[in-house]
Length: 300
Image (cartoon, rainbow, N blue to C red; front, top):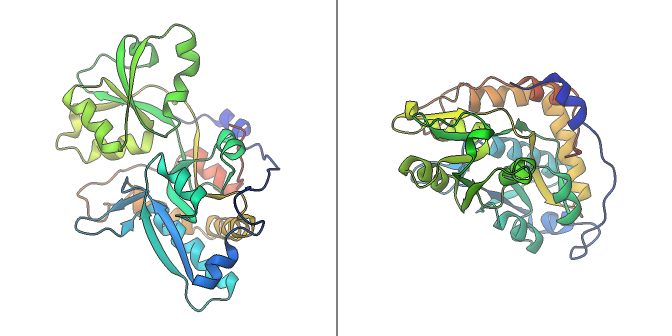
């Protein structure tokens, strides 16, 4: 359960940043405007934020719909009659290199806004569209129920995510684990399912999504307290300040007019498009408060 006293700690606005050395000061505004095209990165396995429908390479999802709404506002701000969206599949590692190289203009996957990423990867984040937290997925028959139960166990995390860092203090205190990584979320889930890993550490909502779509969801359990607070946001280059301003203005408007609440109900409290299950995950107190007082930077 989210704790109310966590909110002040994470809603600390951080102001500042340096320009991205490999991009012009104006970012990609002119390039996007001249080509009438914007390239969006997405994770094919980031359900319900972004995923591919069977037989299609075009992504759908909660983050994708929000991204489309923000791009529509960008098109209006640029005075364009049309702004085409190209989609590019990415993963936990390539999202950063693709953004830096210009292969994508915005990352619309389930990416966590962190201080370390803002300061070392020269990126910027929109106002968050979701507040997640890292927990643990294990077999229902497992005796693992909390972090202490991880001692001498095999822990897997998705490569390029912040999940493993949540064990930092526990590891320095003597917790012993065997750690491995997978490239795709499905591979991590499969590792727990087939017994090559004891626990998958990941954002709670993604754990719930993969458990829900398993042939026998009751064979898995999600355990432990929240190990972190993960504000999930759209990511762009630090130099794209003009585009970020438009995106944040639209996010505030969508929070105010209840459009985000409508989209949340569609993707978290209704049967998922192309799937045979419902996540049945009501909006958390933390996300509700964040949408009431939107902020784009977090002291995490």
